[in-house]
Image (cartoon, rainbow, N blue to C red; front, side, top):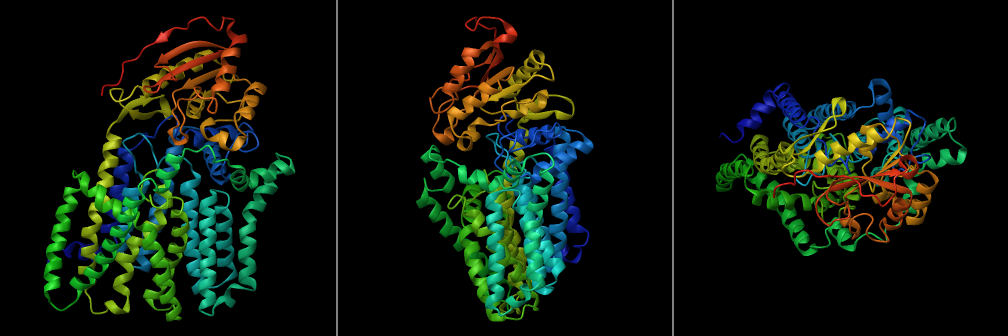
Length: 634
C-alpha cells in the first residue's frame, strides 16, 4: 500500500506540502540557472535591445525591423524605465512572470480538480517549460525566451480559457469584456497564438450553440466581448499617433499580421522545413504518435482497473507495475533510452491526444447539457484547452516536443494531458466505484520518468555554462572555453567595440548578434538587427544593402553564423546570403581585427571587426593583427 501514500500525503496536507515542494523546486531552479542564458548571438539579444532603444525614441517596426506585436516590448521598456536596462532586470522580470503563473495555475487547478493534480501540473511546468535548456546552447524556455511574445501570448491565451470557462457559469458583460480584452492583448503578441486563441473562442461559441445556450453570448455580453477585442489594438494605435504618422501607427499596431503577409519562405531549406514539421522521419514519428497515444490511453484504462475497490488480479498486477514505473523513474536520471522512447512518444502523441480529447469532451458536454456537475465543469475547461492546443501544435505537426518552439506551442496540450489523466478521469461517473488514491499514484509513477529525464538533461546543460560574458548587472554565463571559444572571443570583441566607438557612434553585428549592441550600449543605425531572419521580410539582399549604404555603421562586427536552416554556408560566402553586403563592406571599411577563426570557415568560431574607412585612414588591404585564443578541446 506504499504506492498511494504519496498521493494521500499531498491530498491531506496539500495546503502546505504541495506548494512548499513547488517553491523549493522553483527557487532551486532559479538559483541554479541564474544568469545562464542561451546562445549570446541568437537568443535574448533582441528582447533586450529593442526595449532599451525605445527609451531613446526608436520604436520597433517604424525604426527597428520587428516581426511581432508590441505588447511585450512595451512591458519590458516600462521595466527598464523603472529599474534600469540590464540583463538582471530582464531575468527578474521573467522570473516574476513564472512565479505569478505558477501561483495562478496551482491555485486554480487545486480548486477545480484537487491538490495533487495542481501539484503535478505545476511541477511539470517548472521542470519542462520554465527552465528547459539544451546541450547545444539553445535556450527555449520562459526564464530567458528567444521571443518574449511567446510566453506572454501563451499565458494570456490560458487566462482567456479560464475567462471563457467562467462566462459559461456567469455570462456577465464584465467577464465578457475581460475575455475580449485578453484576446485583443493576445493579438499584440504572436500571430499563431492569436489564431489559436481565436479558434478556442469559436469552439466555445459552437459548443454553446449546440447545447442551446448561445443566446447568453449575445446582446450585452456579446457586445462587451467585441468591444474588448478591439480595445487593446485601438488604444495602442491612438497612443502611437503621438509619436508616429497614422500610416506608421497602423503598421506598428498591425505589424504582426502585415509582416506575416510579406514573409517569403521560398528560400527556406527543405530539409530544415521537413525536420521542423517532423516530415523527415514521418514513419518513425507516426509510429511514436500511435504508440504514445496507445500508451496514454492504456495508462488511464489500467489506472481504472487497479483503482477499483474489489481485489482482483488486475489490481495486484497494477501494484507491481506501479513499483516498476517508480524504478524506471529513478533510471531515467541516467538512462537516455527512457527519455527518448517514453517521453518522446508521449510528446509526439500530444496533437492526437488533444484532438481526441476535444471531440470526446465536446460530445460528452453536448450530451450532458447540465454543466453544474463537478466533472462537467472541469471537462469544459479541458475542452477549451484542447481547442487552444490543437491549432498551436499544428506548427510542429509530427515533431511535437520540448525543443525549439515547443516550450510554448506544446504547453497547453501538455497541461491538458496531465489534468485529463490525473484530475478529470477520477471524477467521471463511470469511476464512481474506484479509489482515487490508487489511480493518481499510478499516474504519478508514469509521470516521474517523463519529468525527471528532461529535467536532468537541462541541469546538465546549465552545469556546463561556467564562462562569464560581460560584467556587472549584464554578466551572463555560457559554455566553458574548454568546450567552445565563443564567450572569450565575444568578451574580446566587446572590449574592442567599446574602444573603437563612443556612445554616440554606432555598431552593427552581421548577420546577427544584437546582444553585443546592448552590452556595448551602441545602437544599430540600419534598423536591421537580425539579417538571418530580417531578409525574409525586408525585401531581400538589395534592400538590406541599401539600408547599410544609407546609414553606414561606424563599426561592423562579422561573426561566424552558419544558417543550416536555410541551406546556407557562413554569412558572406553565397550570393543569396550576405556576399553582396560583405563586398560593400570591404569597399568602405577597414579590417581592424581578426579574433579566433575566420567567420567564413565551415567550422570553428571567429570574428572580424571592420571600421569605417573615413575613421581610420588605413588602406583596406593592410593586414590587421590576429588575436588567437585557445581552441576548444574535443
